[in-house]
Length: 348
Length: 82
Image (cartoon, rainbow over all chains, first blue to last red; front, side, top):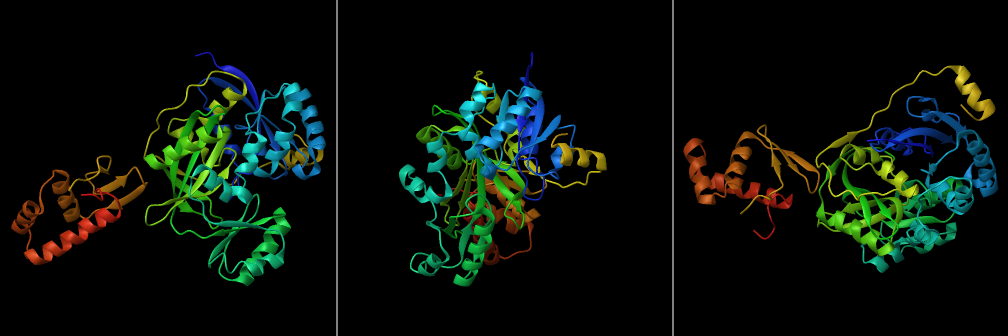
């Protein structure tokens, strides 16, 4: 098969203990059967490990933080585009998605394609709106409430029992066992990720996730279900196994059809002892464990790039069940000159 | 009573449920009993086989057997309607 040569920009290069999806995406793209991929890393911090992994990333450029505004990001991307002629960008951080969605038309004019959810889809599934989302699409969601001020925390006793989950709007989640702990978590999370902070009923059970890809017209192009086998203290899967859960996969297709989801996603679910599934979160991007999907036969990063380029994509129908992913960490030895070059020039 | 069709059991006694991702390790007797269940044998048939080959009285075996079946049901390895 003649592979199409493409240059893909990816972020999420922080292969740390709460990893960004960049590494899994890069590995998937390098294994793509239909694409010959050159990867441009888009980094925010100079110590994101993938910057220095030259077997996975061909060249890396630093980006301004999303909080600096769309104009700054656009201006930086204009420069990068002059140098690299990127065909597709896959933003892998929750916190940057909004900015990228806003500049999608400008990037398109520059020749850069993306395959992201529409703004309404992005907003509708947001943690803050998840309860309404569950009602609308008939999916069980633990009761949740967005809190904007510390004093609101004192009014939650009638709505919640302890323990409960306190979550940031982008990242972080803590279990709180009393009002004081809720307040501590509220302050910690709001200082880091801003407002609102989300309170959610704690549901006890086993954690299951589905990663998938919707074509924007209601078709599920890919869907792989996974049970977390080993969870870190940050709640991240360090090992997981692919499963054939009919209910989860049907629910995923229902979600894609009903919302006409465009792009990659991850459904975070919990199964209670009485076998009820609750939807905890919908992440509107490729998750860090997506390499499991690649390993069991559904190369989501490859399919996403093809969709972004307007190429034909055949929906995946099946995958290998009972395969595990096991994450590991590894030390890299890096010359100071490389770190210096990235720090001083913003590119490597 | 029927074991769910997609349950994978290896000769070593490792059992994997592909629907839930859960795995279990059976001891040799559990493995033997499960093979009987898989073949569709009744409790009476299984009991007869086990009592002939092991030094166990029928009351103890029945108690342990029901316990084992209850666990299989709890872990959704056999259908809840059976």
